[in-house]
Length: 109
Image (cartoon, rainbow, N blue to C red; front, top):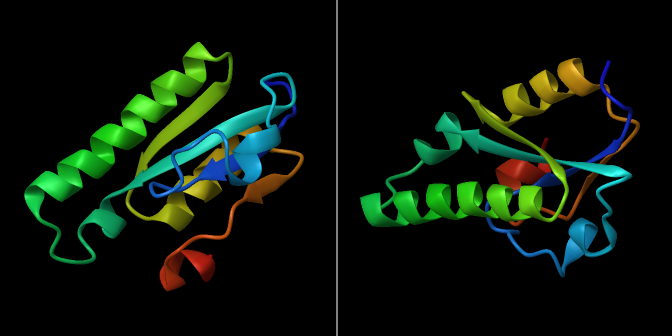
């Protein structure tokens, strides 16, 4: 069984360890969730290079966090909500922390 940890949910525009919920995170007490949402990517007409940059940055940041000792749950999901719900089902986190999202849609989650 997985160790019960608090989860920090990181959005694609929050890829920085020195801000928000990640600023005080510790590998012993926090698991990181990053959701790559097909729905988010297809929700507007992104330039292909911008979409690639965003996805690549998220994946690289996940690797950086793993190298720093964090357990990272990098999820590919149809929607952000589906990714979070799957994470909760798999890990039953004690808490989920987020920094305030920049998009209206993400704030509604």
